[in-house]
Amino acid sequence: MKFVDIPDSKRIEREPDDRNLIFSDGKITQDGVEIKKIELLHYRIKTDQNLGEYSIITALVDTDQGQIEILYDEGYRGDDALNDSATMLIQNLGLSGLILRSLISLKNELEKIEK
Image (tube, rainbow, N blue to C red; front, top):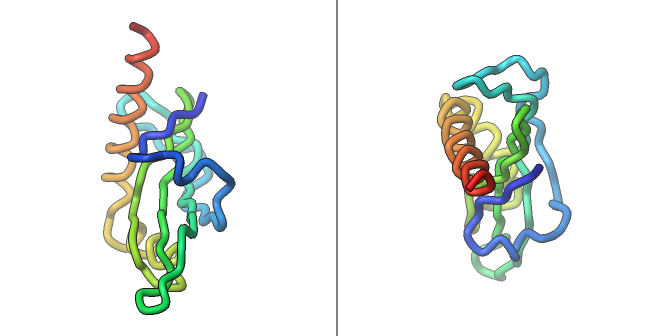
């Protein structure tokens, strides 16, 4: 089951323009949830003559309890927004924060279904 936790998710109701695989060996467990794969997805929204390309970068976290896609970054981030975001995520210990944020969101979505 896949959940999308993004404000105005209609903006990304299509295949992403690019993907960057961050993690895929399925050996991370957090709070009893196995993380199988983490990807950053890049959606090009529009281009401004002065500001450049407007991007939405989301994180897709695949777990043994379902998938959750959450907003990672958004805005005028330049021509290499996806790679810049991936570098920032990996080099600045952002992966643990991303995993925790994703799991909180996933658990909230699963609780809604159970009720």
